[in-house]
Amino acid sequence: QVQLVESGGRLVQAGGSLRLSCAASGLTFSSLTMAWFRQIPGMEREFVAASTWSGDTTDYAGSVKGRFTISRDNTKNTVYLEMNSLKPEDTAVYYCAAEPIGRLRVGPSSYRYWGQGTQVTVSS
Image (cartoon, rainbow, N blue to C red; front, side, top):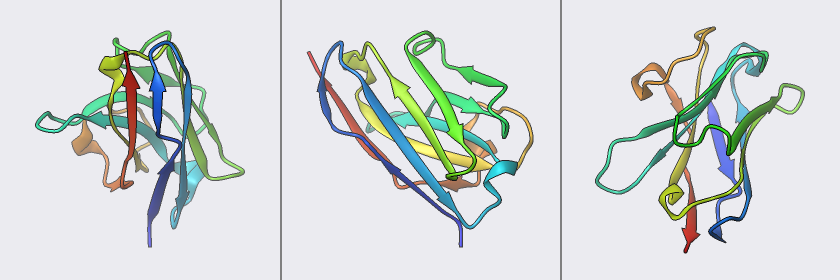
C-alpha cells in the first residue's frame, strides 16, 4: 500500500521559514519523481516544485523560485520543501506527490500518488 505522509505545516509570520517533510512508503522511493503542489479552496492545484529520483534535476514554479528548495533523502524515503521568505500568498494546503516517471512533470495529472496535505498559513 502506497502512503505519502506530509508534515511540518503551521502558522508562520510573513518573512519566516518552514520545512515541510513527506515520508513515503510502499514504493521504491529512489525510483520516484517527487513533487510538491499547493491548493487554495476553490482553486486548482498548483505546481510548486519537483525533483527527479537522484535530486540532481529540480524544477520550480516561478512564484517560489529562489525562495523554496526541494530536496530528498533516499535513505529516509523522505522529500523536503524548505520554504524561506514566506509571503501571505503562499498560504495553502501543500501536497506531496509521487510517480515513477523518471522525469520532471508539473501537471498534477502526471502523479498517481498523493499525500493528505498539510496546511501552511502565512500571516501578514
